Image (tube, rainbow, N blue to C red; front, side, top):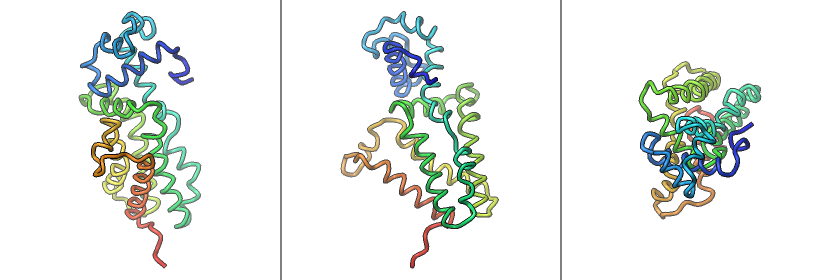
Length: 220
């Protein structure tokens, strides 16, 4: 059962308030009073009642934010679609679907906009931080391992450095969105963020990866 389904309205308000503040300022800079105020002036004692303490709230926020990474994986996609790798047309379809899986994990399937920023905050914590290590070891590295395996199968190339570069190219789009939900609009030359822009970005990344894998459809 998801964290969201387990929490009542007041507890969920506190979790979302904490997530927004943690994503914007980092976990160490935010107090329980800040969280209660952000949640509409909630009683600070409710944090203790629902989560035990600030650390318990941080853990609940982390579980909530990483839920899309827990529910499915690139390995699942690979196992269900690996027969596509037998032909060149199938490889194109496989890569397109693979990019969609990665985009969905880091964008469309995030339960709240602040989740991306929170994950980025965790990844920026000191190297030995247990939450950072868990995020990397449990969710990030398995995806990288599968991606490099896919790269090797399609290209016949054992250059894992190049495979890793292509993985970073795809996931870099996650970091572009992470700091601020309005960042794309601020960066956009026309100062706007069209509804379909994420899909356009996904399409662009797909074409670039197909090109990197030498799988672009030949001109006829």
